[in-house]
Amino acid sequence: MIALYIIIGIILLFIILLCGKIRINIAYDGDWHTVARYLFIKINVMKIIKKSEEKALKSEKKAKKNAKKDKKKKEKSEKDKDKDKNKKNVGWETIKDLLNSAKEPTKILIKKTSVSDLDVKIIVSGEDAAQTAIKYGNICITVHTAIAALRNYVKVNIKNMNLGCDFLNNKTTYDIKFNIKIRVFTIIILTISFIKNTVKTGIRS
Image 1 (cartoon, rainbow, N blue to C red):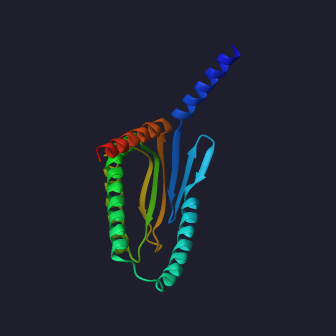
Image 2: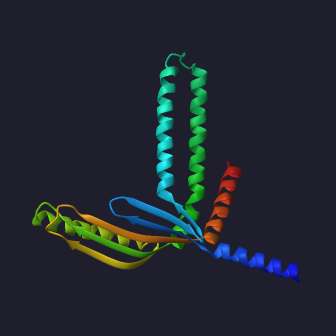
Image 3: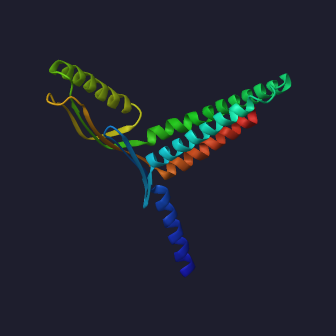
């Protein structure tokens, strides 16, 4: 009986993990703030991006130093150049196959994704009243058009919409917050579908 309870517990835990949602909290106040959450796990996405950018800058500096050293070396032969061209062509074909395999899963992923608690607060300011009014009109058109376009692809739940003008200041302020939700089970199924499509295209080629 104890073994049965343990198996049932493991199955229930597995179901809870699969049915759980990945929640991405995104905010913009002049700078982007992105935090991904899953159950008790919390990841600051922007910190990871900043670290990767710093690594990329370091690698660029190293590449420049190596390029200076390589100038002293002999130029490649024609055979070596042909080999490089062939490698580039094969790499491009592989990328095209992967993109084609990802088309359908990506469409389904977008449909299954939802945007909730959309909270938009934009206070428009300009150098004078006329400029403020023009900027306000442009921002209203941009915001409402963007939301309408987004609703063609995903579910959008608006929590608050506040677009206003401030004729006393010169700087427009932004305070935009929203959450993106997607189930783990959906991601797993679509990943399997992507792998199947990739294998099929590999067999055909």
